[in-house]
Length: 263
Image 1: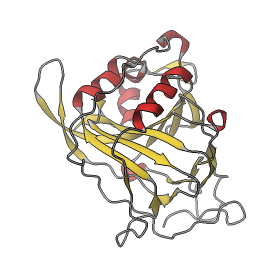
Image 2: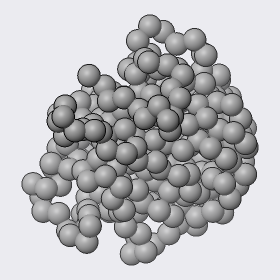
Image 3: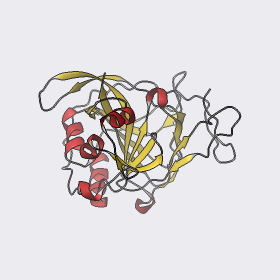
């Protein structure tokens, strides 16, 4: 059974929690701005919000780079997500752009610190060995999902409680040009806005399950918006129930992709 939210803290707008699998829209890849300036990998690290479940990389992107991307993303042909979801889907109200772009996924992986930090993760001050890395990431990591999604949440928009599915994908290896059967294992959300840019609300909230039926569930884990922060959370069968709170002022901009592991 899905864990229930603390009704005194949250007022879910829907009891539906399952999201449908995404299919990339037939948009041609846009002319993305350069991913520059970037933060040196040595200055970045994983922060653990919930062991083996929720991690962040604060300040992955600079405020300048985030501002450049928000200006660019505003020019893309975003479409409104239907307010009335299909049966079994969570209620989501936002504007989005979706494209299959292996080149941009590779740039996110290689031109920023994501690839280096994921391949040789240091968590809670400890460098993980090969087996620990496989256990954490859900297998041998190949890179990032080429299914790139851009989300804009304006005032009054939100994403109700839901789980993120794991999907089977064909991963294109940039070094060899070969296609490898893969699966997605972790969701990556790159926040481009925050209260510093005028966005209020929109926090991502996770609801951990109780260890047993006799115990009360732990308190929700609230991830505040912070410009340039990357949020990573496990999805698929081990995904936690979570939601994107309603934006009360301004706009929340997010770039979404996923970690891909060999099947």
